[in-house]
Image 1 (cartoon, one colour):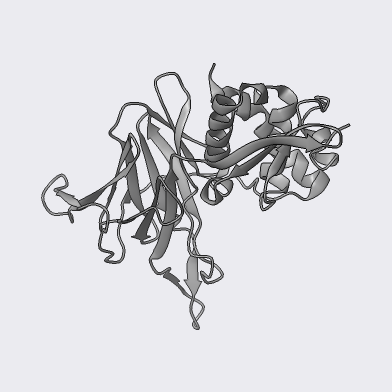
Image 2: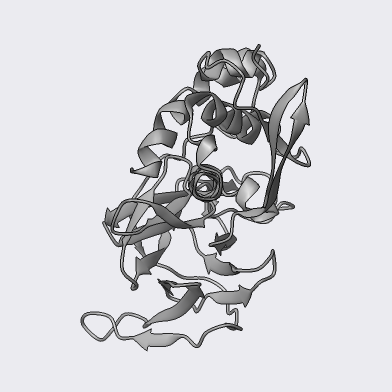
Length: 285
């Protein structure tokens, strides 16, 4: 069974749900192409960058930092080395920080077996040979306190094992004389993780069996790829969760109740589809 196929259809209704319930998390990143990354001067803490000379010998070298999470190995290449920190957001996580100038890019390459799947929100799922999600990379984002007008960050696939992160260069800073100047480099951070659930347990709710799922904090905010990994590990641990109604309840929580301590899923609730599940506050009867 390809886990990601089961998740894709409910997520397609996200835009409709936003109109119905004003739920967040459905922004779709437009994509653009560019050249190799540039920016600040972070120092890797979890890996040593490997300089890679570029074609022609006149352009700056590309620095490659290795990100290892479980059996998954990614290489992040940009003009300046990425900073990689281990387990900052929980076991099995890696926090990667880049500094990219507008119009510059970083490349994410999968060097371990499998493929990459770039989702519409900029998150990236790592798939094994069966198409099952084994790791997730959250959408690259600037710091929460970034100044207004910070350029958009785009993510697109290059091929099955490579993706490109680019800071949009269409944003310009207005000057006093009416002209515009190129925006300053942007610090971009994303999280890679392999353990998406902190715990789960069966109990009773409204007179029926209820599965309380506690997703890891990083996975709650890792976009579509994070949700795919949560569902994969949930179904692997509790096969009863592999049903339409529990999937819709899961997606409903991810879109509209992401901060709830536990996401309570009941197998006895009717399968009324994602939109009606959402209008019932994830608890259709």
